Image (cartoon, rainbow, N blue to C red; front, side, top):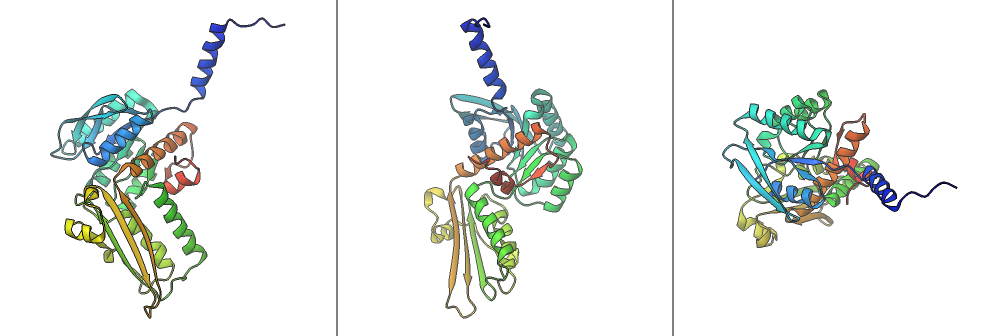
Length: 308
């Protein structure tokens, strides 16, 4: 008979095996601090047991540092301004040297920063999750693809809205022209600090056009609400004015006798932050497995059942 291992040795080996099989944790470089979305995502990262990089990129005129408190932890983050792009590159390289493949940038900055930031991520080959909307999206995709950088790029991080988008895409594919002759109206409301038109609303336009809305709907026809009085009249609760995303798509038949409405109304930011962390965990798994595919969207994340 084989001799029994001492209990202490058996326990040590069991703990070692458990540690080896446990999912690896990411370190999130939260570009967009000290903004409200940046703080929400940073807190979500800490709640899930991930690390938070002690350096991050921010916009011109922002403070030089901020603190994130969550789950009994306080992390002080030094912020490097967009007015110092060379220092931003250095910050990423320093964090890469410290955290290796586990470093993943999350970008919730400003539409004007999308392409300059993506250029830096491509140059440093730093994996990233891009939640910032706007910018030149074709250029963003090209620089990411050309540099073979791992990324999740999506205009929306809420899994239910992602599922709705995927459903409408499939409906448009399976039943083209199902809403032929219907006229569409699209209204979206976000907090006043959101500078551009909703990326989710823009993405949905393509599906509705394939469904046959007449005349074809242009993204410049999206009604964008940013003023408090209009937002309240639209139905947004006053306590959500500083953070919300309300969308209404109205389709009306040519003779006005039939109307369909699709709505998704979100108050607060937490659901997006949790979706971002789903994307981070998904991307880390792809990086560590050496996936040949390197650019993903949130439908990819949802399709693999990686959203909690």
